[in-house]
Length: 320
Ligand SMILES: NC(=O)c1ccc[n+]([C@@H]2O[C@H](COP(=O)([O-])OP(=O)(O)OC[C@H]3O[C@@H](n4cnc5c(N)ncnc54)[C@H](OP(=O)(O)O)[C@@H]3O)[C@@H](O)[C@H]2O)c1
Image (tube, rainbow, N blue to C red):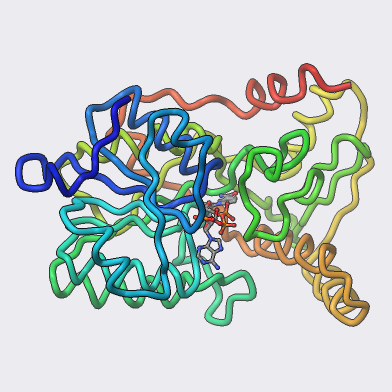
């Protein structure tokens, strides 16, 4: 599609102007794809880097220096909605600039479990807690914000891992086999409660998350948190689905809370970084951080998200 600087259209089409703050692949590119194919919204990317792959698709990419507040403000003038997929200090700078230039809506980089389920001292925090505090302050001054809680991306189970799709670099578990299923090695790591209570997660493909986010842009009002899920499923059942897809049994290793705490300590002591983050994500799963029982966005948007079993079979269909 033709991409125009949103500030040229700000006065006439301010409600249609969008800015995506992102890198060149991953979630942001899915969002851009659906924006350009399903809507008439104008959008631009902000990135620290030139992204020839994006510009080749006709999308406009503006360079940004998050350490320079006036540069960030300048890039956001006339923008209606910011969708952020960045974290840390850079996202704080983006929030401040957006509020300064009266952006109407801000979507923070929160496409996972609900912040309500996080512990006070969260080892997985990448600056989200500070960002949400800042957004609550800015809301008092008129900038709306909404979190899109969606649970786990199916792409955690992709061949090549999330990294193959330019997703999840900041999670430390973007390599194949880093989360629950290691299909190629035929193993599964399963968090469980000794009480016998099931460990559940909500899930959706990143592509469907993007479809919901884009469709939600046209909703007249947003709560502070949207919940959406394609599946709410027991971890054991994820493993069973993978076994059916794979056509054989996976070697299951079960982790209760005490085992996880012990193994996390050992990984820290031995400086085994990848094991440490892998176990932290299993612990987060055990703690129910990716589980919620009610959705409020599925009901508002007539999209049929892909089922996990179909997604998994398609993802692994050509892999030997
Ligand atoms: N639910 C799930 O299972 C799941 C899994 C993975 C990710 N996610 C969500 O997806 C979103 C993106 O996470 P991610 O881990 O894929 O991305 P990420 O690694 O955090 O990076 C996203 C983009 O942020 C920019 N960036 C990175 N470091 C930066 C820095 N120091 N300063 C400024 N900008 C920086 C980069 O864009 P430029 O280089 O273009 O500037 C990068 O491509 C998050 O909201 C996360 O919650 C969800």
